[in-house]
Length: 219
Image (cartoon, rainbow, N blue to C red; front, side, top):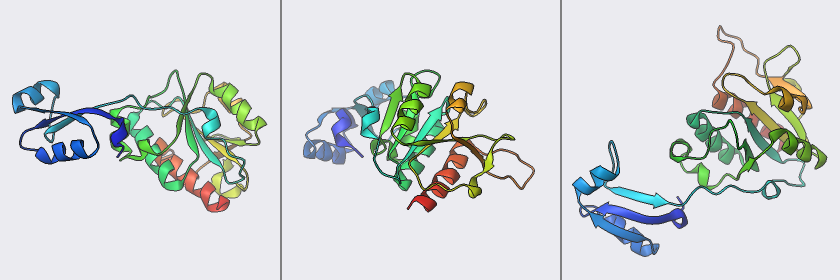
């Protein structure tokens, strides 16, 4: 999806179409044998291996907008790369301004996230911050309202709030939810009403539902 991130490719001699692409985008390439490639990767492959640059993180100023329709997603302690990949895919589709991850106790951008996101990782601006609580305070000072996704007696039904303002949607970890200090920065807590026997949803599924309800009202 982004040839500029590729530093070099290794390709089997039977897959020369990749060599043509490498030449087109001025990417260094090496033709190798099947046995050499099998030593480089484990499991199945498609006859090509790419060495890519590290994933690029943005700064907070890159995602802050002076726009009442601005929407940022902050992930507090998310650990599953599959969930992060799925969330990035939804965020890209919904035109989210950016995603915030804490540096500690959080999943990082990696190959699994990239694969699950089906390319969205190249388009969504992801910011890594040292202190999520302090970052939320900064965003509040810039006019954002902080909404936390949390099932509790203090939470409002997600369908009952109006979202006609700049919003940071906070999603907690799969097991523990939103941490106490982060929760204290939330202006509202919201939950998705459950009508079946199961009382919770996968983090990426609930994030998608909330993003699109907010977006429905914002735009």
